[in-house]
Image 1 (cartoon, rainbow, N blue to C red):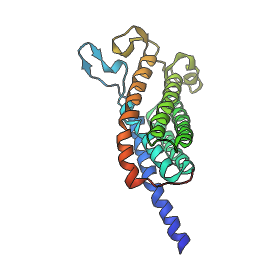
Image 2 (cartoon, one colour; image 1 turned 120 degrees about the vertical axis):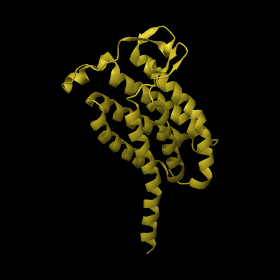
Image 3 (cartoon, rainbow, N blue to C red; image 1 turned 180 degrees about the vertical axis):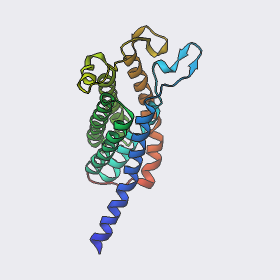
Image 4 (spheres, rainbow, N blue to C red; image 1 turned 180 degrees about the horizontal axis):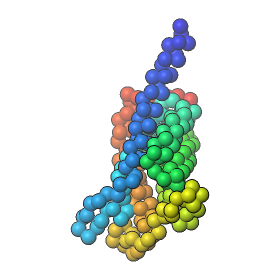
Length: 218
């Protein structure tokens, strides 16, 4: 009877973080295809931002809360669930090249986040949920935009029999700076949002530590 109760508790523990991760990954894979078509004076946000940049950082919040409460092993399982959903969603909504970039970046970025967070879990409460998403986001952004849109990896489109989807044509950096390849401007804009989100999401992380988090072995 005790084993049955323990198993049910573990299933309940998994349900919420897996559901949250699946929702974030699915939304981000859809929204990353839509530039932010907003003009702020001479600034065109579409030159360096997609809507996916605003939802994706929540994946790191889900991972870090899971890691804090249930440990790194469970956090990796939640990431794997998000990875599998990402494969399915990307297969329907994106080209094979973008799907490959998205899933690769997600898996490596999230696993790096888990590793860094686990190293910092015994420090001040804010260190892990700040440093881990920042470094995970940096790697995630570099991998995704390089694989998906840099002409260096145009061979991925050829491998799948698709036309070159590289975004190498010039665009103003951050919408106002010197001309750079569009994929670089998009990568910089994406990471700038993730950088800000790492700080902003400390508030919900702190708020949820009480009701959701209990000490667990990594």
